[in-house]
Amino acid sequence: MDKNQLLKECNQASRGNFFSLEIPANSIADGEDIEQMARQLEKEGKIKIRDCVHNDTFVYVHGIVKYASN
Image (cartoon, rainbow, N blue to C red; front, side, top):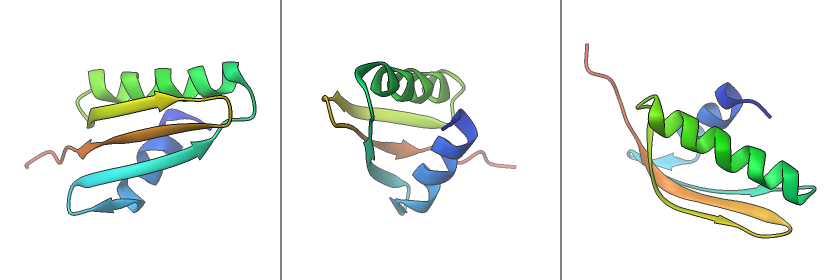
């Protein structure tokens, strides 16, 4: 999974502009990578993370998708 795919999943899982994802992580390192990608998307201003929980089996990310106004 890369950042663009994570952003796409956030957009697909959103209701309005709120999203909630539960992503299975195969290993602890994989879960940390997913969490880092979510933090990078937050720094880029694409999402706002409200909650990010990392367990052995999944990463739960809850937040807001930010839409750019043109």
